[in-house]
Length: 254
Image (cartoon, rainbow, N blue to C red; front, side, top):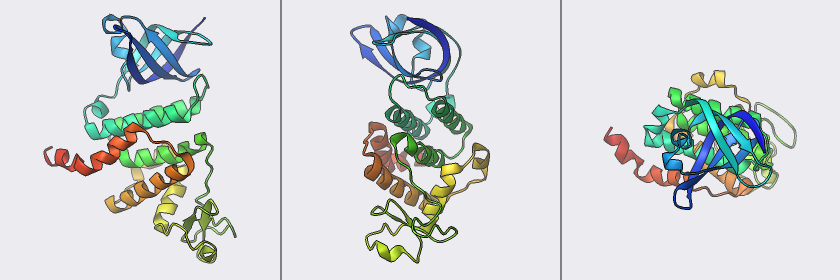
């Protein structure tokens, strides 16, 4: 058993037996780990084993089986995100997406930093839909998907209104779109935004403003990409999709 200290973000927890709990934590230094917490509801750890809680954990890691949380310090939550059902839904989806993209016990400090920063920006009040789109686009590589939205895959021209081709797994400029009669016919502005999202820095986010109509086009196309290339169906994403049908009722009552 290896005793270490590492930053960690709780992805989820679930009951185990009558009084115990299993807690999945994405640690900065050691990847995703499953921790066993005995008598969880009466434990000093109760407050820090809730989803969307970030702490510096002192843990005992096992190479196989469950690991154990010994203590913690410097814990914090995301109260604004947790206090709004829309923000919470998107944040929960990001946790589930990161969980799906990363194998257990595989260190990925870059993804840990990216997820933590995205949640922090949500807490600051930045556009949750745009942040989610950026996260989705940049995390595609963790699923082994590499797509170029910058140029035509045939002639490599840039600065053209591009369309996307599943046949060629890339974009086509107007001069070569005839090569795929079943191309997506997506708004070229969607391709432009995805190109920006792939390499955007967080310092640039405050300058991005996207209209609702364009957000819907982005949502539809990114969903298509995930269906075609990733093929995962997360409960948290389905909740967001369902929320689109009734969420306006809550917004109207704010």
